[in-house]
Length: 629
Image (cartoon, rainbow, N blue to C red; front, side):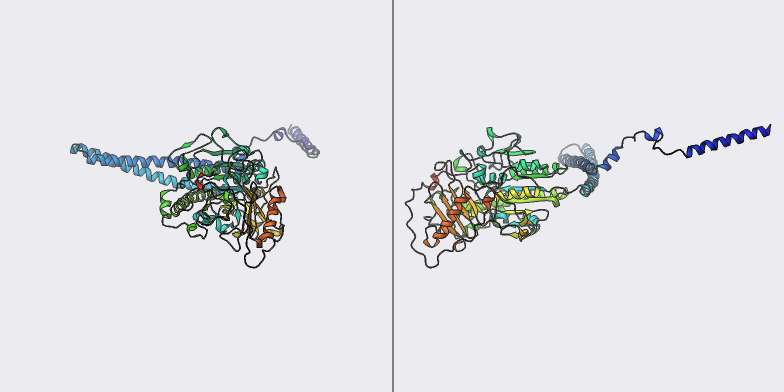
């Protein structure tokens, strides 16, 4: 029996081995057990975050900031409780309550003060931990976020002279040491609205249509926002924002809820030059406030929000400073700008540099065009000019604080190393030179503007390359890799930002077209003057009164005291400059950036009698002339 069982077991084992062998030699057809072929389980949130590090890091930063905000709120509440308990304790001690009751109340309030201070200490420790957590989260975000396209932030001031860059000490310290100052930058159309239109379009007025601040060919009504820096940068993937001043004539019934191309539209529509009472297009109204601080606050909030997105950002902060304060009546239109008291006090003892300029309150203006004799204020009054200087400088110091705060926020967000920063102005301003107070003339004080650029690859130092606001538009589009949707009259100066030699670029233009507005009563459909500026000369001619000309030889007459347009020694120079002005006045695109070559030299020898001047039209008194704000 045992033999039979052993035989059966042996047979079973043999059969099992045979089956195993058969299975082992079956070819691998790629088939897998059903369990292995089932789809994998969904990835966990942690796996998803690992696959997308930037959104995860952004979320961590937001969470850390939210926690910090809660801790700050708790700290404020604890401090408020301590102040309240201490105040009540003082009141109890001064009261005439019965001694026993007073002692109980004092003991209770002392306990409340001690408890409150303990809460403050705990909140302070929690705030330290929360701040450290925010810094850690931001560091991780900087580590995983690819640089991509650079951000661009432009601080556009109003009526700031080039020499007033000295009133931005923090800005100069933060940017000038790591950026380039273009010391020969001009506003080719030194008037608020046309200048801003040049920056926003990269075109001269003959091509963008904005020739004045108001009228048929002036202001917002003549501006076409369909193709601008905003639309072109938006098409290139940028988030775009404007905060502050926009164009003259924008506001009231013509204000739009947004403008084409702008992701964030935050233009001033009320009290643009009031400084203290003003309003934005979204309905926010402010009284007894300060416009510079609010523009800074709102632009930083946009940067903070847009820095958390994948897209690069472009922010234009349009500060009204240092434009004069414009009151409700004509008599109040040219009040000094409003500066904070601490800064007004700081500048009260400094003398306005223009008071010692050879051209200040120039007595003989017979060689100057009659249409240049209007003035935005008492240009011959030393006290008035001094007052304007002090308050302009004080207003600029608040802008300086705002720029510094913006730079610090960019640094905190890890965006500073990938952000271009630009500080400039729409035009300059005369402060008593040539008995003039204002802009819209071809004096260097009105033409030259500050231009400070910092950013990735920008060299430190200064450059004398002659640039203007339309060039800045082309440069911004260049660094952003944006494609222009219309022909630009400006030219990118990116090569100059990176190398003093221009990196082998074609020669820069040697003649810049200048334009100026005119009182509407004389030229509603034309510019008052057109002209040119070269390294040595400034020339202008009236298009409605061709006998009105001006020609300054800045090499022999840097103060521009004497116009030599009627001096026979300069006849060939004048003729060539007039020819260039006529050619450039209808230029488009590359033809606006020509290099004409060397100018004729003025004839040597003593001055010869000038040709008699044509009988000029008798100008109206300065105070009765039409003024252009």
